[in-house]
Image: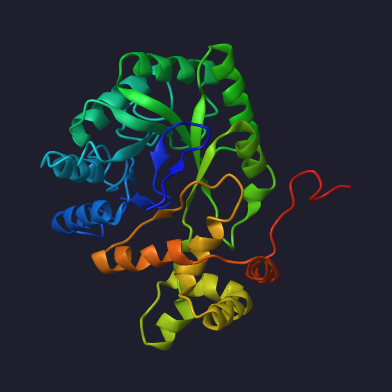
Length: 322
């Protein structure tokens, strides 16, 4: 495994990030433990979670599973760079969501308890909170860092100007600032190329793409349907919307002799500012198969062909002006 720096930090992480969102809702605790153990065996040290994962308000199901896995010992916690997120609603009362200093303090303590650890490596705002001044949430994050409860600060779903403003506020306080940004980014969804990626690159923020397979559309969906595997209604609708592109894509992957899912991930690893796409395997087999991604080296001709199939964006403002 060739580890990479997360953004401009000195923190070394694997170029694939293990997403835990399926742990609980889709994958049993026993299988989740096995997947995390196998991830370590394969060299993956970067795991991502969130307090809302498990999708039962306030229960933190997924974090609890990860915490019980850590509690088994054997160096599991020490070998893991654990990232988790706050902002989502964890209760019906006021201040049980978003980014007030009060909620951040409570959310951090609750995540630490569920994860059965005394510190979080990367604590991430799950979404922008337009109702809370950035000065307030930076002060709250600074306090957590001084207390030793978190090491790095990350964001998710921030616009380019949010990143720039956040870094400016952090600099005013003499802080290191944001180290990572989780963005919705894949061959089909490329809006972040306009401003988020160039901002992240300039500010030294590592981008961690979520939904790298566009909800499965880039994972060989036509092959699966042809083999009789059913698709959800929303998937069928999206497939019909993008069928021409998906057909061309899967044909190109056949020419490369590679699985569409692994090509999509390998393409992300070639993009500016990207540190590690988030993978969400439901089984050990899916996890092991994904390692093929790290062996694929797309050349300039392949990258150009993928841009033809899925047109992207130039950096703003050149994308829409001279």
